[in-house]
Amino acid sequence: MTVLDLLDELEEMIDAAPKLPLTGKVMVDASEIMELSRSIKLSLPDDVQQAKWIKDEKERILAEAKNEYERIIIEAKKHADTMVEKDVITERAVNVSGEIYRRADEYSKGMRLKTYDYMDNILYNFREKIDELSQVYMKGLYQDINEQFAEILSKVDGDLAEIRTMTDEVQNTEIRPHDIDIPLGDDYDD
Image (cartoon, rainbow, N blue to C red):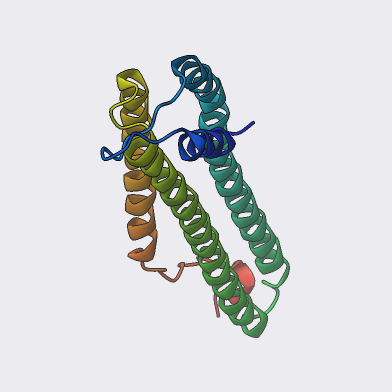
């Protein structure tokens, strides 16, 4: 059962509890609340594990983008080397390889931005859920759960700040044209 399911169960327990007249308070069975609290504590590591999976997925996507970028660069260099036979072909090769570099840079930048946006959304939604749990359901009941939420929120805030910093860096990175130096042989000394 997920933390949210357990919290729904807690809400139902509170809604079904007998109400004390004129106070707005309800009477609940302490043993049932404690059992539900233990279940929530046991379920928290699953949510934390999901956050770790998201971080690992981000790193995997970035590694894929880097590998694709390097593969495109290698292909561009091979393509340029085969076209060095004549000046016109050499000029075309320089233009084409520059375009491939530009596309690879744009592709890499786009992949990083999509990854950061995805991570930002996941972490933001996760933070909202943790915040909701902290403020609506747990306030005043279990101090130790609040401390755990504070630690998780601190980590999520740090990750959000890191993602947003990396996003800003990528968005502000200007894609520069690549200088391609093609060595000319003795046939071109004319």
